[in-house]
Length: 125
Image (cartoon, rainbow, N blue to C red; front, top):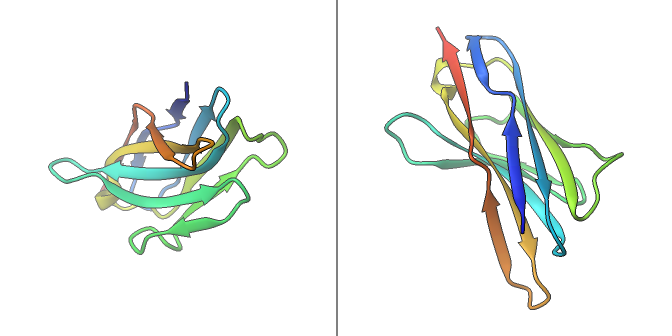
């Protein structure tokens, strides 16, 4: 069973910074990648970025250059991983619930995405 937990949400003024953490643990299946999504009030959940188990990152345009995803390389294993979403120069439109995901792959090559419960980020103007 895969568990995903996000930490670090809160209230910040526009232009400020916040760092979210995400811890994922899997039983026997290796974690291949971890992703970040967000859902603003009244809007659909959107993908914002990800990091693979070898450290490759991907960002979407709304956050590129302001947000950075990194992994705890010294401690991460294939079954236990921690990653961080560093958010700088925050804007009111970044206000949302932020979710972390952990993708695992079984022996047949099937990929499963596991979600955390989310953490709230509020950016005041």
